[in-house]
Length: 194
Ligand code: G3D
Ligand code: MG
Image 1: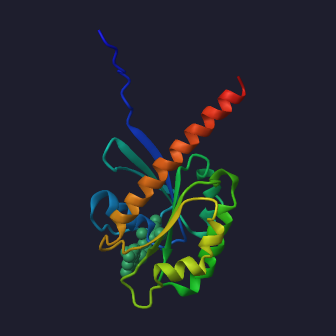
Image 2 (image 1 turned 180 degrees about the horizontal axis):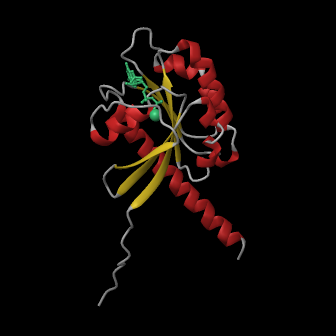
Image 3 (image 1 turned 180 degrees about the vertical axis):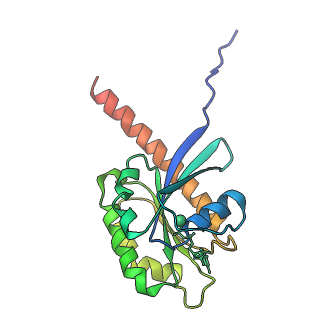
């Protein structure tokens, strides 16, 4: 009688951290992704958590953290378990673009986010004068600041949902790849200590 490997692969889960300035559209995006609906949002005090099943036994837990100035000092508390960063930008708000870039670069410098994949959502593409993905990539110096990790800039509109499924697919594939490489490096570290 032959032998069969009966080990079933467990459902996988990963943590996605959503950051960005207040009013970038994070909560609207999360509701749209989760319920395919637009809800009236109020400024997020603290954070929202929601799980989204991406199929094939893979669930993403989204941590939508408030982006007001006072809340940003607490962003660092959410970094440690992040398997991916979803950074949301209001592409139409040119006045706050520089502020958003500074926060983005600051957060990427944190050790806990080393090699963690990043998807930047260039949100509010429906608004006149919204900067496109190329322009956001350039203004945020993303090629330089994300040179050590997988990254992608996705144009989107949280109100209509345009661009969100592409972002979710990209995120899922990056995060799966990241989780695999994290597992491999843990195994190597364990072997080294033997
Ligand atoms: P936040 O969670 O990042 O702070 P919210 O942002 O999700 O609360 O959204 C802030 C405002 O931006 C909301 O409008 C919301 O409807 C709007 N918004 C979010 N995404 C889009 C988008 O893609 N296009 C447009 N035109 N508006 C968007 P209010 O008026 O409720 O403040
Ligand atoms: Mg919010």
